[in-house]
Length: 269
Ligand code: G3P
Ligand code: CA
Image 1 (tube, rainbow, N blue to C red):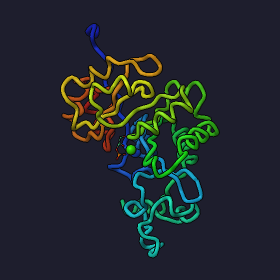
Image 2 (cartoon, rainbow, N blue to C red; image 1 turned 135 degrees about the vertical axis):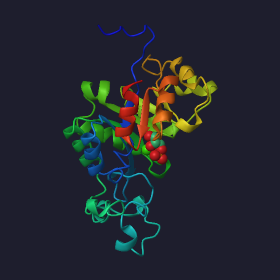
Image 3 (tube, rainbow, N blue to C red; image 1 turned 30 degrees about the vertical axis):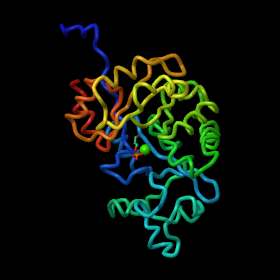
Image 4 (cartoon, rainbow, N blue to C red; image 1 turned 135 degrees about the horizontal axis):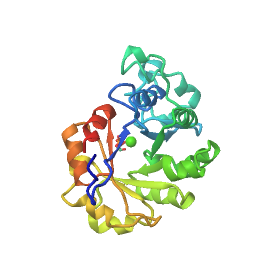
């Protein structure tokens, strides 16, 4: 007979694919979340920004220079800010070739298309409000998009959606708009500030390389806006031994570029 779990046993950490599965496919593209699905990854992380004509798109950098062929297509538009080009202009760009010729023709997805693909894949989403100071009002726009695309029903809100940001101001604004949605504050705030952050954040999602001893326990000891103990997802963890150590220390999630490697490493924890 199998041994009963110890009384203090806790479930292993959730594995979240960073920008999809960005070690294996171009980050923040539909191909990247499809790759995550193929690897059996149920949670994907993304980054949301806004075009010149007001469309929400999924991309990490504030410029298109690193992850598209914008330099070649629009040589006179330096520094190729997302906010300086229209959606029609951005949709002409190749967001896959920089990674591998295998992904030539991949596009920067709109948030609408991205949400539809996550839904089709039956995945869950950790959505990051990126660079919010560049995009006044983006919190309301994200809230409206989530509502329109069916991401605010009971199932999505209870189990399938978390919204995070490095900006406490932006996250607090989002929480005021949609208090039912689970939220995460990115960064490693000192323990003395956790109670203040708990007014609007259900999670503290820290840089996994800068977590002091006892930090996860301190986070768990504080209750977030929904009355639940706060949780913590650590990023960006690509080394299996670090993932195991952080999980043993109390991390509730591991955000990683290599979700297949982390799933295998954590299966035994
Ligand atoms: O989800 C955590 C992580 O994405 C934060 O850093 O720069 O990759 O958005 P960054
Ligand atoms: Ca991110």
